[in-house]
Length: 197
Image 1 (cartoon, rainbow, N blue to C red):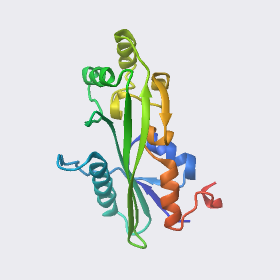
Image 2 (tube, rainbow, N blue to C red):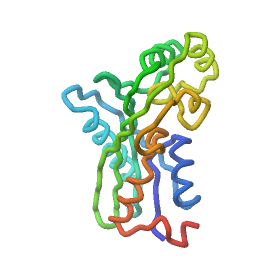
Image 3 (spheres, rainbow, N blue to C red):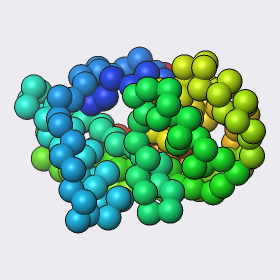
């Protein structure tokens, strides 16, 4: 069995990867700093960040497959990252209230044994339901929107805010499992391998 390394401290990504391969992976969060690069399209920027994270973690391992991702919400050409405080979460939710937006993830899989690196992006369209100010504040008070791209968690209480999703649901959570599975296949790793049971 190949060693799989998740270059993320995200509990959501850990849980999603666990769905694919059980507990057969290591977690090694990246210390990569995401430099602002305003000249890049958002998809390209997210891919660059995922590459940076994978390569940062690669410094600590001599073999294995490193998986890294960077996810953001795009609305009206604006990249909405993770709010660090309630007021910012409220502001983001008011922007997205009753509107369609995209969740985009840059995904990199780096095979240290073959020196292959595959990076792709995944986009998912999301329609948020209309909420009044009290509903937005109530959701913010749960604390769930903090540290989530776009200030919502599709897999948590935020699920009741999502009217519709078109594309990979798991991408909206932070790790596009379909695309990840296809990339792993290209590297000769099947999630159906008995060792991942």
